[in-house]
Length: 259
Image 1 (tube, one colour):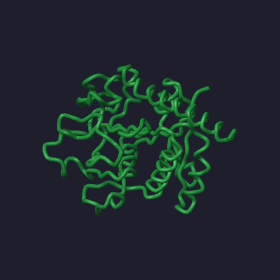
Image 2: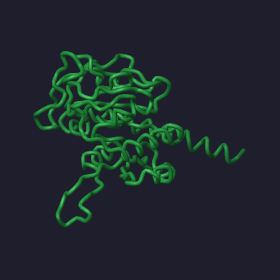
Image 3: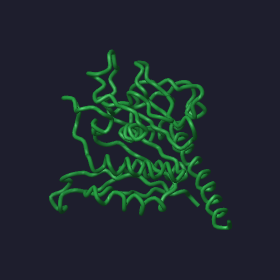
């Protein structure tokens, strides 16, 4: 049986004059296709507009999935990591920020793996006490271009993989990746460690240092694996970890019931 992978929905405003009230909860098709190709079964979980509903929704969602994907999206509110907004920061989405933070903490406590991509890696890092660059171009000296101008399915810069990381057996020493972000991890959060970085020192990936529950990735392998098959190994490894923890959680539940 395929493990169930929850994807946090994004919201598009004004997609159609025929849609009332002109907002739609969505998940890009590329996530569905990639999760299925890697052996998982995707479901999409929307966040509430009312902050008061977050605890109820998180607890209702948690038993429905085995692993969690946090996709890209708007900038993370900088007050969540102790900073005031700079002139260069883009629009934030407070309900989504608060929902994802609560969902991350509940998922981690439930011993279920998580995978954050782009903005998803940022909110993961913040959940573990890390900080972000609000805008790489103005805050990081000699930064390369990370907000690529070419289409997102094409790689534009290289990343260097840490030899002791989980990524290294999957990709080797170096990978050619796409790059669609102007923010990035600045200080890695508690219980996390560096897994990859760009030539300018920008953190491109991090992972759990204490277990195998967390992976944060700055690039988008879901756009690359069709032409660069090793990129699918990242998702396949995530699914493998989800399967292992699903079995361990099931065994622990059965043992607790028997006792």
